[in-house]
Length: 309
Image (tube, rainbow, N blue to C red; front, side, top):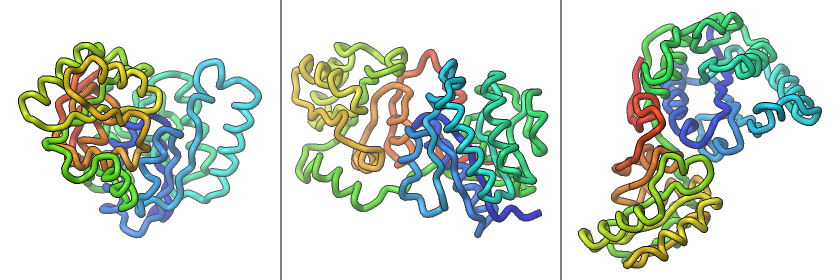
């Protein structure tokens, strides 16, 4: 059968959503004219806010279904309401862009796939995917880039080899806001430094002192401008990096939404920072990346451009 309405599921963070754009691109190439919906987390939703290839974005706070919170009355009610709404949408196919890593995660994904009542249920299978009827064997994290797994699932749906390019849609309004943050005449090169000292990313990053030394070295050797970027929760740490620097660096952490961050990184000549959402955004808009890795798996999550199956 021809899939006219497809649901693509990825309840994960910003970087994972950027990698998912390869599957969105592959679907547009392989199934032109199909109506594509996404089910994503609140952190991922802004990636697709201005994407004309996407008909509808379902947004769910994935923290509500993690660990013990998944069994609270409120979480169960909201999850059930989501499943009911998905079932009314009339999908021909659902693609689960997830590994079936845990039993609880598998149950959640199976409930989505079955609730849609879609005739085609595609996913990667490590032995837990009995509810799938189109499967790609899952040899595990790092056996292929994460984005390539999801492009391969599009190939299963299309019945042929496909390819997809990672990329973000950056609206004109976001570019205008980025130019307000970094006005014309700012000395180049522009180097975005993401210190990664917020939330769980800190386990992948250097200290504020180390980033300050790197930022000073970049300024001294190039004569350009270092921009300290990050999310709202990283603003205070970015200010700490700025105070430790000998040179001046605008603190833009917490001042950009995702589209504006993409536009800002599009203007930059280099990104320096840990494996993170901003790193994937930088790569997706074509900015050269120098990234710190560990303890994450670079074979799985390294930035990439075109992916094939």
